[in-house]
Image (cartoon, rainbow, N blue to C red; front, side, top):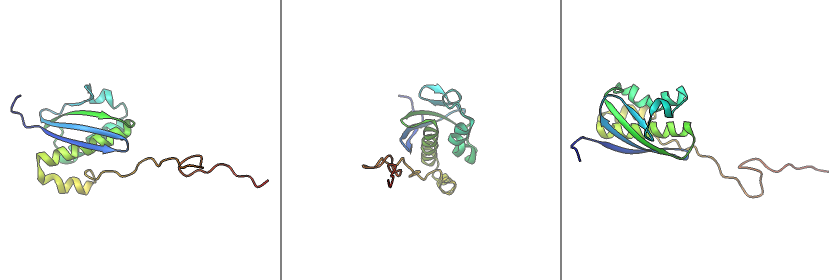
Length: 131
């Protein structure tokens, strides 16, 4: 194996899990062996995932290889952002405070609530009629 410094981290959001490798490079991002722009069709998802790189101004300094499983595309973009942020902190611990302030290192705790027994959904009840 070559002697390249590689930073590996995991990011999560909802049901999505992103395994991220941060390598010194020119700014190429690959997601599930596909180009970043091809994988994330929506512009908002691309902007969301790249936020930590843009805030630190290192968009062209690192190559990113990510494997993402589970969830939908927006959840996957959030997981990728979380994973990239964690990898950037590994590469330069001085960036931790800035990324923390922006909220990129905080795992978003919002999850889908489970359906409850005796109800139609998580909160919705079955219809009730008096007569």
